[in-house]
Length: 141
Length: 194
Image 1 (tube, rainbow over the protein chains, first blue to last red):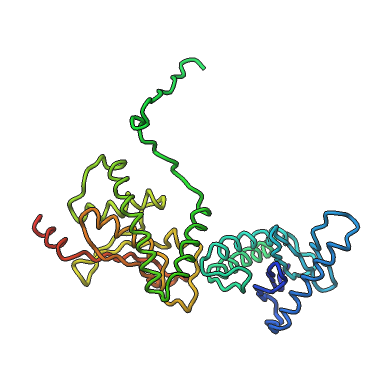
Image 2 (image 1 turned 180 degrees about the horizontal axis):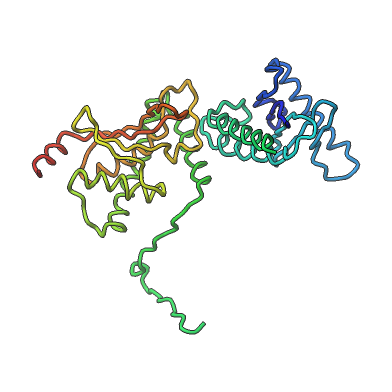
C-alpha cells in the first residue's frame, strides 16, 4: 500500500510555511523540520547550477532506499514536496492538486500574510480530504 | 450571410437600449478583490467591530445600486410594499443575481416578531476565507449583511442586519445566518395594511 509520510511547503526564501506528518513515527521536532526545509531549499538551488543541461528547474524526484521525495516548484518559487514510500505513483498530480488548494484557500484568504506559516482552517480541511482520497484510491487498486 | 440584419446605429448614446451586461465574472477575480477589500479595511481600523462596520458600509453601497438595477430589470419597475414581498425579493432575486443561486432558506424568528433570517450553508464571499481563531466571531459576511441592509433601507423597510455563524451538529463548518431585525415603523405599517 502506497503511503505518504509527510508534506512540506517552503516559501521562496526557503522558510518552512507548512509541515504535515502522516507517518507512524510521530511529528518531527519543529527545529528539525525547519532545518530540513532550508536544507532542501539549498540543495534544490544548487542542483539547478550543477545541471549539465541548461534550463534545469531543480530536483523533481529523489529516490532513496526507504523513501521517495517528490518536489514541485511553482513559478513563484514556492516549493511543495512530499516524502513517500518508494515507488508511489501519481505524486506529481497530488502535488499539483495541493498547489491548487494552496492558491485557493491560502492565497485568497485576507488573513494570510505572504511567506508566513500557513494557519488556514479551510486549507487543512481540504488538504485532509485530498490526501484521504488519494489513500483510498491506492487501497482500491 | 443572407438575411443578417444590420445592427441599428443609434445617433444618440442615450437611445441605445441598456445591455444586460456580462452575466458571469471570474470567481477568483472577485475573491482576490474582496480579499484586498478586507485587508485594506483591516489596516484602517483598531478593532473588529470597526472592521465589520466598514464591510457593512461597503455592502450598503452595493445594496442601494442593486435594488435600483433589479427593480428596473427584473420586476418592471414595480415597487414592493409588503414585508414578505421584499423579503422574498431579497431571498430569491437579489441572491440569484449576485450569487448565482437562491438563498438556502428564509425563516421567521420564533422569539421576536420583528426578526427574520436568511440562511446559507456557506456564503459565496466566505468560500476561501478562514478566519483566525483570535478574531473570535468575526464574519466577512458582514459585507452581505450590508447589501441586504442597503436593499431593505432604500425599499422603505429600515432594518438592522447582521451576519452570524451558527454551528451545525454533524458539520465541521458552521452555517451562516443573516439576521434581519426590522424597525418599529415597518411592523406598524405592516399591521395597518393587514
